[in-house]
Picture (spheres, rainbow, N blue to C red):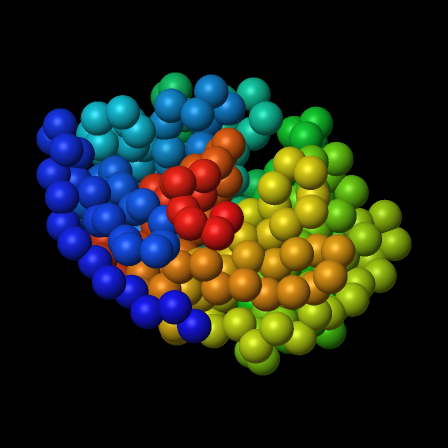
Length: 279
């Protein structure tokens, strides 16, 4: 376990938390309201954040940190998981409080309910590369659901899961990676068959994860311990890369940079993996 030694530096107006023998952390935006779900635009210029306690979905300009609400109010009651369509025109939010899956048109802010019954606490959502299907984790229902986005029809892909929460798909959209909050497993699901296997990693309240493009590594945020962790999918080895992050949630990988919601500090941060020692 590496211990965190931190210093605060201001460079060209950007607030940077520099970590000795760790990875540089940049604060992108502050003043958010319990940010959980996170999605990035296909061009990598914009982040979308589910602000859970404000019943709000917001966009964040990654260059300036400017925050703008897209949808808010009871129509997005308790947003948790968040995903974006491959074309970057629509968002899909799993509503923790409303037990719904909703679709949000990014340009207009108009919201459509895709699924309004059957979930017991939907928390994670991921969209297939063709944009036709969502996969939703139902934490209290212990189920991974497949949802046809055109019709709202849903079916259980895998059940008897242990409080599934975070979800990410491989680049082909054939395999799902899930976190189980208790007892802290990584679960790998073959979407065609529903067969799955568990890696018992002892994760601490892992709400979110992201898969690298080569499908060789998974990055996981652990809110209970404040860790950013990496799992080698060939060996199952768990490495805790960064400590002391706080109540981390949504995470998305883009190039060598990870974007992470810290809902304890109400901020969006970025971690530059390519600049850390020992990476």
